[in-house]
Length: 133
Ligand code: SF4
Image (cartoon, rainbow, N blue to C red; front, side, top):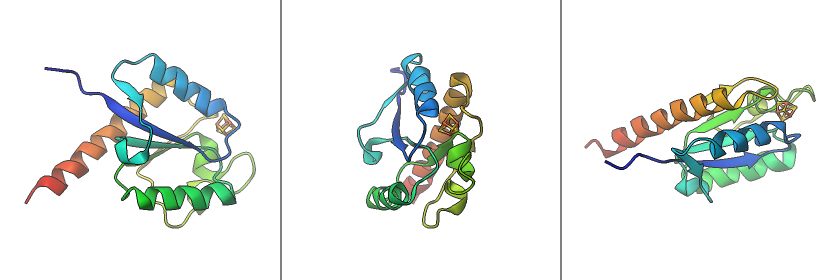
């Protein structure tokens, strides 16, 4: 049986780039995880950065337009509460359902891979519920 590939869509909402580099390293080292070009194609949507006002509006619209299909994973302390800017992150973002988060500045690639696999499990559970009559 073919191995399942987990597709990841990444949205940088004003990150310094540190979390994004660790995510790229994590994905390039694991054959069961690959990039998705759009949130519609994704099994997991990963957010990095403090959700600047412009990025926040764009992200909320993007996820709404994708039907909120992919569970959102906030990666890094900035995505959680806006660190080191003192405000922002998913904690202050209305209209966005965040399923899980991974703290760190930045978190290590192994932690990121584990968090993505857990989030993909959430996606499978949601899909199975939608398919149950
Ligand atoms: S959590 Fe740290 S590494 Fe990640 S975007 Fe923020 S400052 Fe950069």
